[in-house]
Length: 146
Image (cartoon, rainbow, N blue to C red; front, side, top):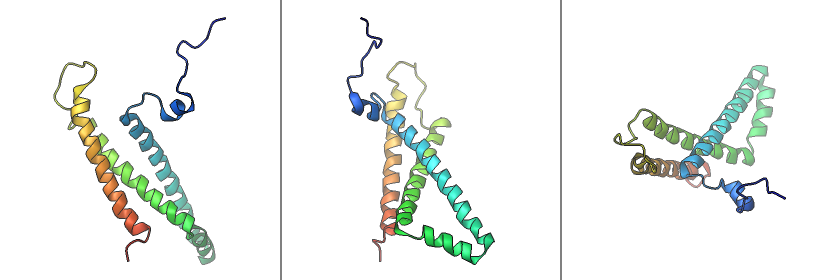
């Protein structure tokens, strides 16, 4: 009896959820895609709600009653969080694609030093900026400021 798996999954559910040997950049990539899809969903909902104004004040007020609740207030904060992350990470990716954050040219031998020495610090700075934006925005959004 032969095992069809050459390398068995010894990490179980944790390995499946955690992605195994994914690096930080892979998680940022996945989060960038998810935040983009979330922003697209918000944009479509925004168009739907805004276009209801064309059907009269009653339709507009009905939609505003639906989206004016506390659940949607938390949703607005999540949209802000997604926007802050997506925008700052997008700027980081643009800098990398334009060659401003790739380091000096070198022989491509793994591990790639330009990635570790230039892109990682840029990633850390970008995520710090995201955290600062989210904390500042959360302070305002969640009504902690008076």
